Length: 184
Image (cartoon, rainbow, N blue to C red; front, side):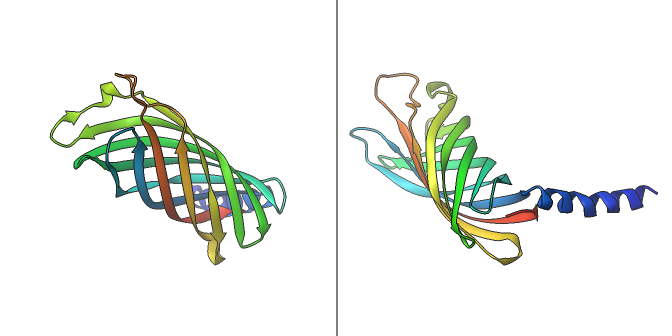
């Protein structure tokens, strides 16, 4: 009886979500992050992001996609590696000019989980615990629920918590995703 119920739920939930214009998926990709800081030579280092998303379609052209991502921002400041890790929550408004392509933009709220500087150690107490910015980009929707895209995240918040020198995150991302069930 339990197996029949579980099978029925696994079969019906995707059908109900699809009919309501809702889809659930996973995504992962690469980050190239740096920070906007005056008089510091900063180089991007390749890092990653991974997480999940929900597509909510209002029509064939418009939708919204909230995501929850673990996002690692590595960079080099005057040849010292800086690792900043965040839980990021972008909420993207999507527009599909054609079925294959979507343009997206929206706010991103991020919460600092780790901050280390090479040869210094933990510096989390020197940075603000959250960040706010604007994310924008484009995605390609492929068969079988697969997708790929690129996004730029422009941080608005000054994350420095110990001096008047402003530090703002800047990140370019590429990703692949898969809508596991429901609408793309």
